[in-house]
Image 1 (spheres, rainbow, N blue to C red):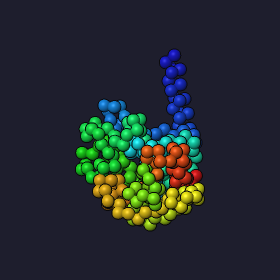
Image 2 (image 1 turned 60 degrees about the horizontal axis):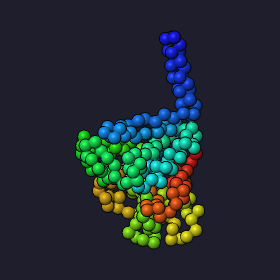
Image 3 (image 1 turned 90 degrees about the vertical axis):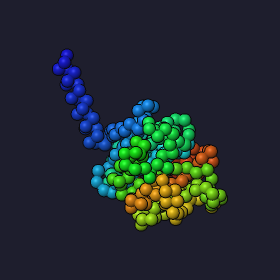
Image 4 (image 1 turned 45 degrees about the horizontal axis):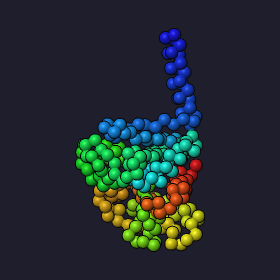
Length: 252
């Protein structure tokens, strides 16, 4: 009986290894970010594990859920095909699990309590929220970081909102990629006032944001602002827009 159990365990391990090798199964890395709530964040890695390294980050604000839902859909629908990516693709679909669950902007950290993740990137070493440390670690491995947010209105209609803007840091790769994204998104939008634009903006307008952290550390970064807060557009449309962006970037 003991021998049978050992053989079964070996068979399972070999099967998992074979599936991963063939790209049939991708097991995420699990990172615990809040022991009190027993929260974990999953990090998926695809591709041939070479360069370029592209990191996609879902909804750090839980009330801007299109990014998380779209990246989870991407993993479900294209999981094994993503291993055809000619480089390394890192996906963090749900960096704010409790925020998504409760449809609120903030996250909960063991030490810092209620936090806005995108206002924590000026923290000193060993004093950051755990999710901030994780994202910092990942972006320093990256040749391009794309982060998905949602705004409450269309920027071309209401300049106080960043909705339907693609906002790159000041690198050639980010502007070139942003322009391709905008072209592909706008191919399906008829109202000129609701079309996306590439917005050249000070990345450090919010000094504690990830965009400023990446700009300061010379890491190419693109901020995506879908128009979607307060259900400004149907969630299905917002998910499709995120998927258009990921298809443009990944190309598989």
